[in-house]
Image (cartoon, rainbow, N blue to C red; front, side):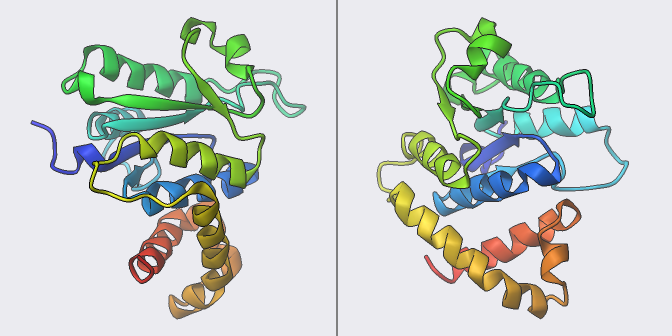
Length: 209
């Protein structure tokens, strides 16, 4: 039986590196501002579960998912592309095709450049992707458009530009929020402190509904 939170959970499958962090922050903020709950593989650390077990559990517990395949490419530091994102996308699509509550599930495919998915995941031909152009503002607009169609009819979701302005306001307020938690702003804006960043974001959003 699905958790009561299943309807509201969104699995986020993106690159976990410092260069992507501004996009991740924007995506997480948009998800929560739209009234949903972001779920990510690094939400909980430890060795009680393997990474794959944790990912499959989170996918099972999430009705929706967002997959960014913009980093499926080679870099000067690595001659091989990163396959984690398309692999996890495949797991989520398996849940959509074969899992429990399959008919209620859906996903958003994000790319850095238009038609990028046609080159790297041609099996998804016919699926609409959204390009964020490596800009947090565009990422927020894409997430908002996706989630606005998944909400309950009685729930109001702000427009994308309004969410963007709130995101900028939160970023301004992050320094005093970090200080209250006895964390530096540099720490709060690192991947190691992402759960703390999410906690700050949640507190901020709850005070500004």
